Length: 305
Ligand code: TXA
Ligand code: MG
Image (tube, rainbow, N blue to C red; front, side, top):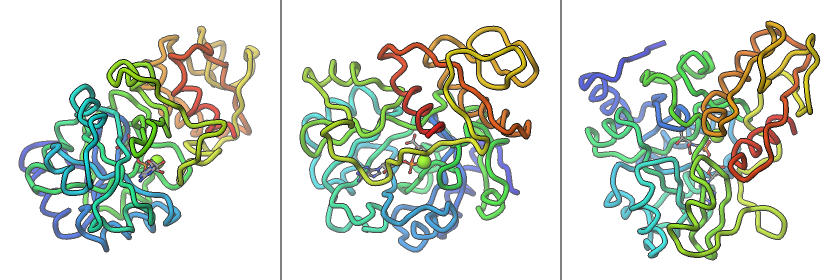
């Protein structure tokens, strides 16, 4: 396993490997990603095999500038410019009409492409040094927890890539907000950038995927799940394992903060930690229901589905 510190020399080295068609696991501000050069169809194709991911689940193209995004996107609507100005780089992914030359391997056969500019110096540095865009899903095995620190990366996956760049713990801890801008703006996956923040920037209402709104490929009911079966509970007994909001009452309880951003940052690592305890199941004490917790609730319902 080749774990590299994000020095300029190492970033250069990884950029060269990516340009040669190899894969790397890179830090972003959301979760770690499994990167391939977006312009190398064979390398992109291998991502699906490495993760065990179905071919119809499209990948996000990561860019280091809007100029680079223009190489993938047929047109940038006004809404995209507004959101880019407000939130890029950052944990927001825009689904836009694709250019004909963008590989259907990346888009899962759709006529749209998802674009994101990650807010992480190592990831941006590699893209700039190699002058390359990256096809990069979360660096987990299909359905599993996305890694938010290097220790969480599946060793089988880690051994198959050229290198892992260690950028420390991810700042946001859950995957980016995905918004479809090809029609009425619609949030396909909630994330750290909220619907309200997006509505404020666009000065209009934004729909959230749900009743009556079409589904996007790659949105599964169960996803982002620990190996241990888990369920949401109102409270946990003093002998029961799980994630709690108050002080833990046994060594199999992990306390998560009552702030939604802090909770999200720690959630996957806490579930991964409980996975190492070899428990038959664990409970997750329900966090508050208000809108600030939408992204957390999305991940909790996927983990417990
Ligand atoms: O925070 C993130 O977005 C992380 C980091 C590594 O950047 N990446 C990530 O990628 O979560 P992935 O592949 O695990 O999830 C991408 C999601 C999938 O649910 C996929 O269906 C959706 O984005 N997506 C990608 N392209 C799409 C498209 N053209 N239309 C609709 N949804 C799309
Ligand atoms: Mg993923």
